[in-house]
Length: 545
Image (cartoon, rainbow, N blue to C red; front, side, top):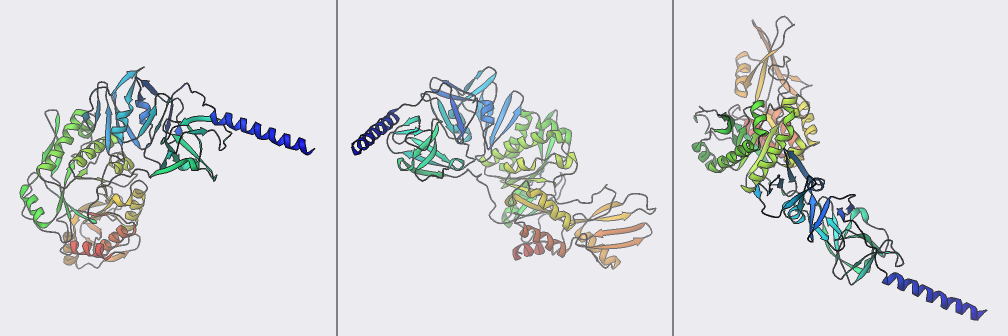
C-alpha cells in the first residue's frame, strides 16, 4: 500500500511538471486584427491602418480621444487639446499644428476618411502612443486618467489569469513597458493586471516587474495673475479726451480700457483702434497692467459673418494680437455680447484660436459673460464650460437684474441674485478663473402715474445718486429682500425709487468673493465711483472674511 502511494505521488509530480513545462513554454495565439487601446480600454472596431510599418489613425478616432474638443468647419476639422493648449487642424489638402503647416506625409484619405500619422497625433496633441506592427496593437494615453508605468524584469509570459497555468497572451522581452490603470488594480498579493505597449492585456507576477513612474492626469498650465484681480473697465470712444482719465484708482492693479471694437469696411472685418499711447505710458508709471477690451460692437449680424468665415476670423485674431503687441498690453479682455445662439460653437472656436495666439504672445485672455439662463442673444450664446477651457479668466457681469426697458423697478444687482449668479457660474467655471463683476452705477426708477404703465429708469453714477440724496435730504431705508438700502421720493412727475450701491453693498459683494474663493473683481466702470469707492473695495478685499 505504501509502495502504491509513493508511485501515485511521483506520477502526480511528473504530470504537474509536464503541465507546468507546457504552460511555461507555450506560445500566445496570434491575433488577426489590429487592436487599439485608449487609457487601457479596448476600442472595438478601431479605425487604424498599418502602412509600411507606420500607424495611421482616422480623424474620427482621434476626435473620440478623451480630453480633446473638435470643431467641424466645412470639410475640415479643428481638434483642440484643452490641457496642452494646442490645436490640430485637418483640411482636405494639409495638416496644421497651431495654424502652421506640418509638412509632408501627414496622412492620407481612405474611403473618404482622413487617416493621420500616429506620430503627428502624439506631437500635436501630446497623447503618447506606442504600437507594434508585428504584434498588431497599440496603446494611447489620453492624459485624462492616472496610470503607472512598469518595466519588465526578464523574458516573461503575460497570462489570461493570475496563475502560472493560465494561457499565454504575449511574450514580453526584458525592459518592456507595461501600464497599470486604477480601474484594473487587482487585489491579489502576487499578481498585477497590466496593459502592454502593443495593446495586449493580462497578468504578470508582481515580482517580475519594477515600477518606473506614476503618471497623473495632465492639468492645464494656467496663466495666473500674481495677486487677486482688482480691475476697472475704463470707457473710451473715438473722441474721448484724457482730461479725467489719468486719475489713479487706489488698490486697482488692472485697467481695461475699451479701446478696440469690431468694424466692417468694404466687406472686410477689421478692428477700430481707439488706443492711446499717453494713457498707456501713464498706466505703466502707475504700475497698472493693461488688458485692452475688444468688443464685437454688439452687432449679431457682423459677429455671425466674422465668426463663420475662417479667413475673416483669422484676420481679426491676428489684428488684435498685433494691436496688443503695439500697445505693449499684458492682456486682452473680450466683451462679445448680443450674439445669435446658433453661433455659440463658432464663438467658442474663435476663443480657442485666440487663446493659442495669446499663449504664444504671453498675454492674458479673459472674457465677460452674463449669468446662465436668460435670453438667447445675451446669455444662451455662451458655452461657459468650453469658454473656461480656453480662457485665463471669465468675468461674470453680475448686472443688470432689473434693466432699462424691462419695465419693472428693482436693484441693479441685489445680493441674493448676485450670489445665485455666482453659484450658477461655478457649475461650469472653476472658482479660480471666475471674477465677479461689480456695478458702480444705480438706476433711478420712475413709477407710472396711472399704475398701468411700465416703470422707466435712468442710470446714475454713484456720485450722481449721492447728489440726489443730499439735495432732497433723503433717508435710506433697508430692503431686506435685496439686502441693500434704497431711497424713495416724489415730485410732480411721479414716484421714484433708487436701490443704492454704497459701502455696505460693496462690502457684501467682496465677502462673496472671499466666501466662494473667486479670483477678484471687475468694476464697471472707472469714472462712476465716489472718492471712497476704490479705498473701500481694496480695504474690504484685503480684510478677508
